[in-house]
Length: 146
Length: 146
DNA sequence: GTAGCTGCAAATCGTTTGCTGAGAA
DNA sequence: TTCTCAGCAAACGATTTGCAGCTAC
Image 1 (cartoon, chains in turn orange, brown, yellow, purple):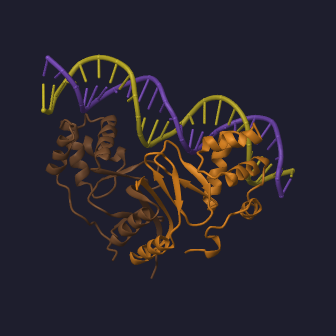
Image 2 (image 1 turned 180 degrees about the vertical axis):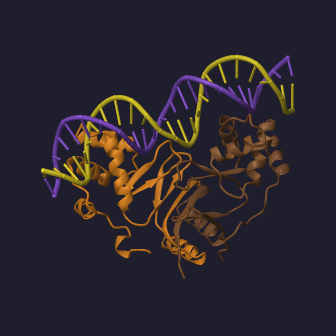
Image 3 (image 1 turned 30 degrees about the horizontal axis):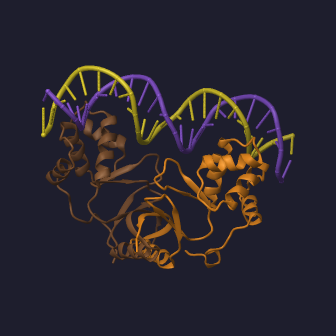
């Protein structure tokens, strides 16, 4: 179901940390750095890119920790994992329902929202007897020239 | 109207082979076996599963050939590649617009069709100035108990 | 104190690729 | 004949994991 209060809402660092604590995770320096870097990223970084950014703050952070942290955050639903048909997975903080269209010519990622789409897929799931718990949806397109 | 079940038109072997020929591919025995096995599969086999099935017909077929063949067929648009959050990719012959809902408890895959969904995503792309050339959409859900 | 976390390096494993002989056109 | 294709095995590369020391709580 759609949580209205999360649509287009920006999850703050303190909120993210709070949710981690609630989930029983220990708030280590590394996790704080990784979360901060993720939260400040305007793009959809790969694990490697994220690790590089985190290392600029704390050069000792290892890629294994980044993988483990992202895995946990993804399980908690705080972080989303995307497959843009690139070589590696891309991540972002879940700031509410929005989707991505990847420009097949430039690789640029356009974000968009659609309540209509959210409503439709929930309806579809219900129609075939299921409660939707997750879904993936990525679009690939070419810019229309005018 | 959403309608679960296997749907859409069925691409015949001869049609598949014809499209391969048109694309300039050589029709080898291995390719014929792989195509036949794929075309007869009612599920969404992984490369490994597909290779095992193909080997029952011709035990000399290697997994490398299966990978290469699927890659080519996918490029031609004859075969679709899915990510069911399993460890490996799943494949099927493209029998027309339909989607998948994976039961998160049993792993069972339910196919469904929705013209409404197709129309909506095309409209969304157009709204943001793009022509949709491809998209991925997978749902994950729990069966509603009655 | 201790359960959970980290860095390191090695292991995993799905997928790709170089090479060489074989076979379709 | 020619050029693609197949099988094999090695390479690749993203991700995971065992281990031993460290740290949040």
